[in-house]
Length: 320
Image (cartoon, rainbow, N blue to C red; front, side, top):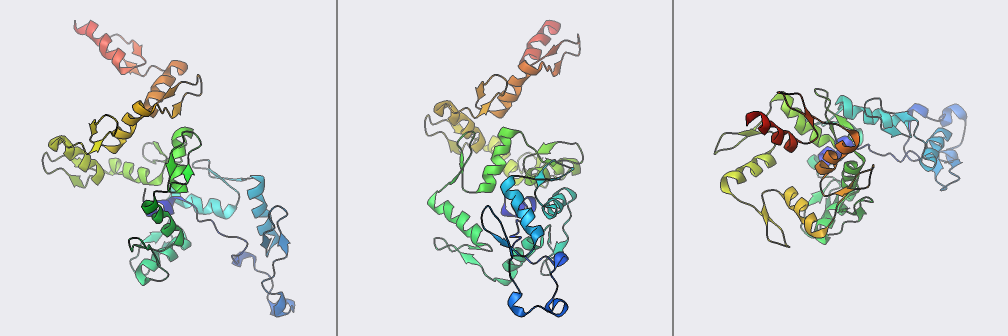
């Protein structure tokens, strides 16, 4: 997941107590006759944390963060928000609306804040530089996250399986594996995804956009990473090696799953009986025992099976 994808997916949280809301502007001095000494005063204070606000409506919105109240619900994915403005910003992720465009390169953005940040890449304004490698960032937060690649620090931990991450965003995306939440849905086929980037990649299936081609066999792919993985089937390269037993794998994902054999980690637990599994796919197959679902049909006699392996064994009776 890239920073760009994250910016498109996540809401930009405003410090509502400090941002002037032009739709709810207090009377100017010429209208009210108040002296300049009253300008900028914050008369409304949160009883929970003491934060001050210029307008009572902003105080009321802020208090919802303490109460956990989220009255505004997205009709597309069900996600809830404590402010109407946050819901409106979020809805742009479903609509694909990008009303803010860069005057330098015409790139579109869902939110004004992200446009302002992007423009710094053209102007060089307020860039934050890593002292270890010299790489520059448009946001101080991005610099801090990058510095963890040098220190190895992973302060954000999944409460379900203990896996650690360098960024809170990555933790949130990961936790959707456990909750099953897939807020980004394909408008063509209805398939859901845990993050916007994966939905965009999936959408290429419908547009038949496969821009990466294997030079050996001509097979095409929607992602460069998938092409690289495929090329290993020709070269036999297995760059990901288990430190415990030395077994090699073509993909890092396969190595991570394999390593659970040695560590005994089984992060996917059945909510019905508590049985745990090393892979999400294994958990989903197991759930069929409880649900009674038998998705594999024999077209010759109509018998259904819970597992594909059982269907294959059964078919031998017909073939002899």
